[in-house]
Image 1: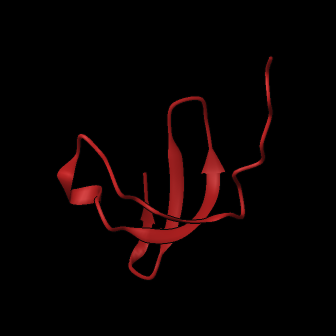
Image 2: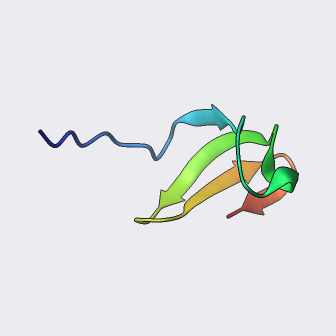
Image 3: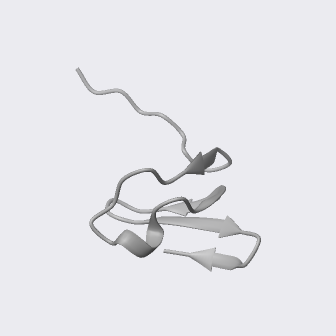
Length: 47
């Protein structure tokens, strides 16, 4: 079973990451690729 879900426009908080500097980043997803999310935060965009 394959489920597609639109992530662009969703607000998220990063709670786990191999990159510890990304943890607790909050923002809105503005772009997505197969392996990367671009999140618009109050400090700009993060990938």
